[in-house]
Image (tube, rainbow, N blue to C red; front, side, top):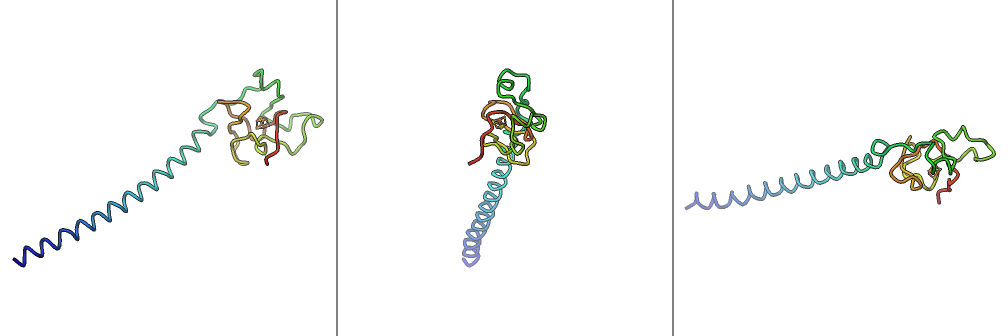
Length: 121
Ligand code: SF4
């Protein structure tokens, strides 16, 4: 009889422990999956996914877009205006290339510029 009681007592303890281990595993795996998803999400909108805007495209020409803003005549562009500090630039200031809402499905150079430049709010 005593052996039976011991067996009954031990089984729930193991189950609780394994349940805790499973919960811990699921929490850890969930956090890791979220981190990986966020990482891939950043890459998905990054420069590797979309082609660069062609400076010779009709829209790019209409807006005087260039990959290197320093080549623009000073009379047309204030020297502190670049894509990477424009309100329409989807990347961070350090990104070399990122999406711009003016050119859907394409990326523009962080050091580029066009006449639609707008200040960040
Ligand atoms: S709208 Fe802004 S981010 Fe887009 S191309 Fe023009 S300057 Fe660059």
